[in-house]
Amino acid sequence: MTRVTLLAGGVGGAKLAEGLAEIHEVSLTVIGNVGDDEEFHGLWVSPDIDTMLYTLSGRVNRDQGWGLADESNRALEMLNCLGTNTWMFLGDRDFGLHIYRTERLRSGDRPSDILADIASKFGINSKIVLPTDARVQTRVLTDEGWLSFQEYFVRERCQPEVLELSYNGLESSKITPEAEQALMETELIVIAPSNPLVSILPILKIPGFHTVLQKATAPILAVSPLIAGKALKGPADRMLTSLNYRADAVGVAHFYENIAAHFLMDSNDVELSDEVSKLGMKPYTADILMPDLAGKVRVAHEILEIYKTISRVGSKC
Ligand code: GDP
Ligand code: CA
Image (tube, rainbow, N blue to C red):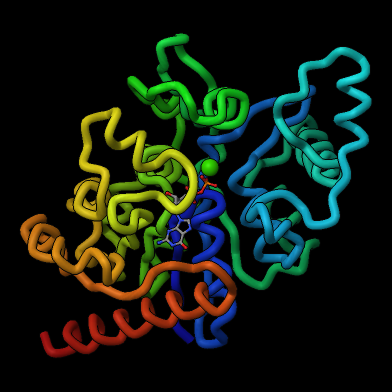
């Protein structure tokens, strides 16, 4: 068994999580992103964590990569009929999960315990843990002013240019014991091909997280979400450009240069290898497109093969 801990956002992160979870010799823990969380209709919604729950329990809508399969939207129809603004898509059974989570939060239960119970009731074999029990919320500055992440992402469909990002609540947050244990006890830490700015940074910036990563002995491998300078879905490439970062694998590697010693990017980007090396990271290339389950498992196997070469080199020292 190889213990792997994956830092992940929503759809891109869940793709790799599903591939790793399919491999019997991997024992997987996912540390998810809470930066997208927001209250809707009085309920606490945690979109990236729910995408992970739905994916790893086989309930996800595979066409979308998020939400539940065979979902209906009668509750939203009623809210709409009553004149409520319903731009955030929440399905009927999805509402059930948000009601359950919110009810338990109101009764004072710890967010990490609630998540562990949901994952267990969903029959998920991998662990999904929260990076923090505090509320950390990504905010997006556009020319319309500061928006919540979901206002930018869903309501405005990522159209406005991103001028600045901030992560509310970060200062008073701290890493959970579950995330700390996962990082300290794992054999390999993987940063998923998720949006670095709004899926991974809200995890890495949690006070204490970086220190634990430095103490952890497992090698750290980051996987590029950009292939040939393009995001496969979502605004990562445009966001990087607007914020004056390079929108390619090197631009992504730059975020992880002080954290990850290993960087996996697509074979199409092989000419960027030297620049990644110059950042002090060891570059690896493979086909990292995950269009289906076979693709997800292929990338997961690539990662395990890289891990084997790293641990062989390590054992010579
Ligand atoms: P979100 O929270 O749902 O936006 O998802 P993430 O932040 O976890 O992932 C979004 C990123 O996943 C985007 O930047 C995509 O480029 C990346 N992504 C999606 N599919 C793939 C894939 O098949 N391979 C790779 N390498 N990246 C992907
Ligand atoms: Ca997300």
